[in-house]
Image (cartoon, rainbow, N blue to C red; front, top):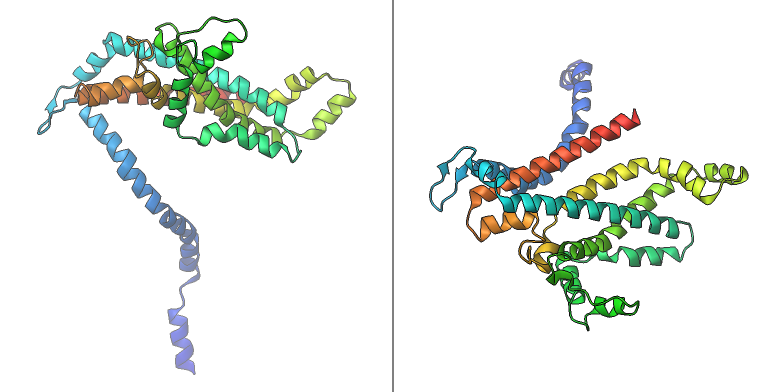
Length: 308
């Protein structure tokens, strides 16, 4: 009996060692669950990003690559087409961000509430977000048909507006793409605003109503301040989405006519896969990544400064 108790005590871990094992068990299990996703991210995201950075300093050939240093960056940054693509991307990102946020907030305020029938409206409004962008862009390309019988020209004809060339004109092609991007981005922003409105303290509205505050004053002094974190999130996401726009531009205009709607992503795609200048295209991709990273950091710093 004495020897059995002695062996059992020898197998039992000391209290300090057991505490350390318990402390590491939780993080270890969490990392084991995350490991498959992290491996996929490593293979499909981080390794290609590293290869893109490496190729941006080389002249890429099929067999061997030649080190060219910063020449690819000098080429892309001094290219007039790249400058025009940056300007088009900024205009498209700003227009899409402002338009989708304003309309998303408006629609969220209109359909916000506990009524059961509103779930159908919210679901119907969210459908453009879950529809494939290529299919959406193809439908809008048909709607933008510049002839008098085109769908949008027929609609604006009802209010006495002359037919517009839409995608066929250098003056209106970028604005037409912006119109479609706002249409698709508004439901997404609306759902984020709806989630933010749920967290607004309802007693504040009741107290304001008792004090005789108008709807506009309640919106200005209660709703909008409560939605400030949502605005920061949406601005960051929408701006990044605007800078990385590709499919809609590629399907609708492919950067035309005469480069009037060329954006960074379509230009990088053409440089890499049509002109076979993979090194210059990689440099353009790194510049776009740095611009996106800078925008995100600046927005986060502004948000923290305002919250402090």
